[in-house]
Length: 409
Image 1 (cartoon, rainbow, N blue to C red):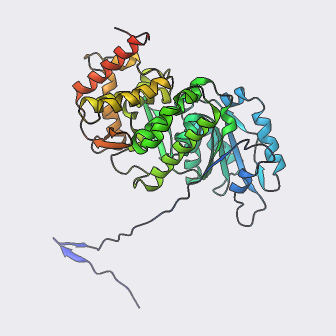
Image 2: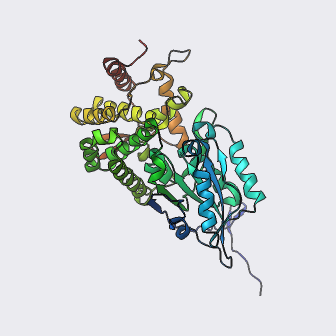
Image 3: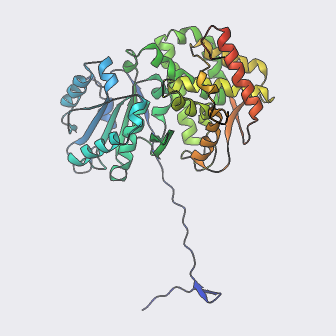
């Protein structure tokens, strides 16, 4: 028996009916907390790794942030010993690959292609694992390599900074910078697992420990007033990096970020809104403007302060709440002004304000900026009053000068 599709005659052309289906994909996003993940007696990673059907062992490629190894010289050997102790369950395909960390690793594609080459050489397949141990920049780069080899390998992140444990490391984005823009090349691909090892934070310099606290303040401002109030009460302990308080803040920040990803309704940002990027439109511009002298967490702290004062200037947020946010950021040790904020181009336009259009362009559609209506509640706006924003920038410059910081006139 033959078969046919009945078409519709339309202006001398036969148009066939369309086919449309909704495809639902479910992701499991797991974030674990531990101490000493690579100590031989710690079996957390072993439990996370699944062996392929019919295989005796899982296989893994490990990439380690060179700066983490410099701070913890025994780390590479510790990783080797862990895999040796668990050799019945998992095979380490090569010695851990050491790669430079920091934003520089995201400024060139060759790091990604180098990991692709190792994945090919060692026949690392879609049932194998790519482990990344490092800060947020390294995790972004390795995540991009894992997401694009074989159209996606199982990627496990071991964040080693407060910022990556509290925020970026538990997210679903991977990427590198290009054309002077943050994360221009990237993917949305949830990691197979995230393992937050608190022991990896102990050797961090103060600047690195402080950076992640900006993201905790950010998510508290837009999602959890009680969390914000707790940080206010514990500001002295946090500024001193008291370990138990720091761990509790990281855990809650990671939880709030994960809650948004799972329940916010747009984890892959198909729309024009990015509520978790409160304070980020200017931060993403400040970093390259400063040639990355200003690190991400520091830029986010400035961006939060700027948008909080702007929210107050347009009558969206009360003055007392705005002062509380700025005061908390200062109490944590952040500098809330950078001379780059007032850099102008040849037409005497502030370069920082170009970040608004780049922020819009990154998603397309309508400009959507998250501001603050009250502590614990963000609100989206689609227009920015340039005069009110410039007033907030000037206020931060004056405030920095009063605090004795060096600022350009």
